[in-house]
Image (cartoon, rainbow, N blue to C red; front, top):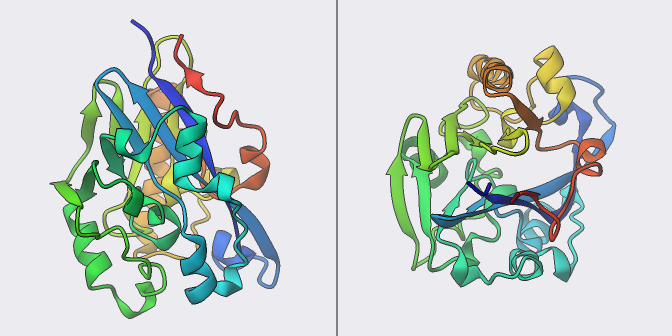
Length: 252
């Protein structure tokens, strides 16, 4: 059997304080971090996990995050680099609905959006401290086709979503099983960095700190039991060592 192809799409970078990368540690130290998406070319579907940020939205609502994004780093351009158009995407699933994970959803008008039932409710009626995180609601466009899910969920054979709440109420991490290469575990924002995973240091942005720690422990457990390499969300040094689209993992 041929492995699916896994492309990592470069969506640009943002800046936050280190105390938000690792809660209450090294305040006043700005950190630039990557924003990326995962495109899975599977025999049964073309799947996109996360869609990055929208530059205009961030410049208008969160300019203090100092966004850097070229035209080549938008979702349509990154898909084109892999030989696809937005209309080719069958399924889009966001780790969660924070602004830096949903900016390209509006381009995917033909795709079905997998969504945790609780995540959608929180995005539409957020707690006061979640409002900036959920400030980009363009994912809820007129053509959106939601498929509400909960619990761990196999999207297609070998492509799994695992519940890792805490950062948000309905957060999902992604596991792609490969026969000919090591499995790939994408943390979403359940784990910002490798230090997060080693020291159980959660991010400053969270709904439930206790569940955030439990999610980190679950990711480490999944990596061990599923023999998977871990891909954290907000660590530039790790990101710079990965193969980026149009290169890919798997496919052999």
